[in-house]
Image (tube, each protein chain N blue to C red):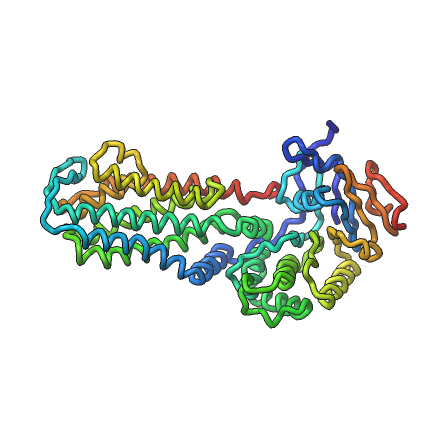
Length: 219
Length: 264
């Protein structure tokens, strides 16, 4: 579960987030959309702890899996080595990492690159590795910043299948999305504009806290 | 301005990393091995400069050199070529080690911050890189000693090797700090070259200002080891170690700041 209250963040004089409040209950898939520079990535970085907000409160209940927008990986390591490095950070033994990484690489169609260095992969495959690194430890909360950039259609479908299973199993998911065709996939969509969020979608009421705004768009 | 309070994030306690330093070190070594051409070049470039300069110097000109034995400074007559060779060795080791450090600590900061998020602590990731730099320093010192020993008359080969290692450690510490502090690689490189080059120019001219530069303890320890029989280099060894520890301490502070997470 994710709860955000009164979150504010500014870069020098530019106010990016201003009094942002919402909640993402267990078993809910929530999207975040907004114009370029609206503060979507800033919001996600604040959620996971990469950026310190100027004000507000964030509660993340459970283990967090974070997938940044640009692949943040050690370029000269192979996929297997990369996952061993990330897995050890999560507290997984090499056997657990091998098991989990093997399953995920099969699911996202990159098992044949297991011994290939990341800097020799295509953009789409790097993005798969970027995503898998966030899923290795079977998190309870997924925070994904445009995770499917460069995916082929099959992998794109696998991604949404995975997310749906994750949601049904009780996980909370937040995905930054630019694609309006995807709106129907989300239980709720948070629109970020002028530093504030408004909620829409079939379960919009579930993500709204007292000081957030509810709109009827997309319902 | 809205009135909201900043509370720390609360999360369920995550699992402790599994053999964090060991795993991070193993992966850093693999990264290093895959960049072997760069490392080879870093050793080759100063080594070739040293050899060209040595073999184009004559073997008869003698110069007075000031060298310490403990706290006592002595003047000894040495071959100009040997004296020059010491400074070229310092230049080679310092450039190699500081550049290696800069290139090992600079890249992939976004990935390193993500690894912090995953569960690693700042010291896991920094010490993994420092172990790798230790390997580079020892290897580059061994390469230089292999070239140095047959060409230069040394009173103590073991002490000279120790002094060069000291230069290497100070170089690693300086390269780490500059690499973390200076945002662009070009400026960082220029600063590292300047530190080694100015040290060499001032040292050979006998200027007092040399003692304020980071490689000075290593240079003095090397001169004593090379030119004074049974020299006591404890003072300069200790001072050099102190410089290295101070620079590493500063580097850790900067590293911790650059990779920090606000919720941990």
